[in-house]
Length: 201
Image (tube, rainbow, N blue to C red; front, side, top):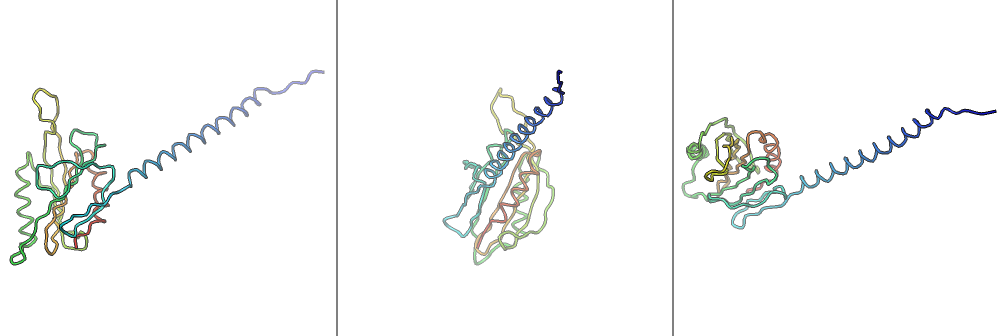
């Protein structure tokens, strides 16, 4: 007497076990990759100004760069998918203790300075608090040509910027994030996290 077995069903059960195993390994690898990425993104370094109480934590993956302006601190995100890299700049000005300017004067001066940028467009302003002191937030856009070399193809980039003017007892700080328009939403969320670490007194 010859016994027959349903080899098709047996094959499908064995194959299904292997498929489940492969899927679990892939999910574990994806989860590990996501954890490593989050750890790399969330790593920070601390900047401390030698001449004032100013300090803040910034993303460790961002690189220090030279600046044409008189900046206290300037870093950019090398991962930015644009010729114009997302940048974080801090400028500091010492105040005259005998005749310190009020915040509105500083705001008006800054708007006038920024309006010299190509295709400058003012977006918004509102009061804020940074590091426990009075501040004001400006938002604006402008156009820049990040690669200005003759005969080299490079389109202009629309830049969206958010700037905080922070009026401390002895200094005023200008903390500015500038990012390509299509990357601004993610960059500004990170910027707000950075601002939580700022200390100015």
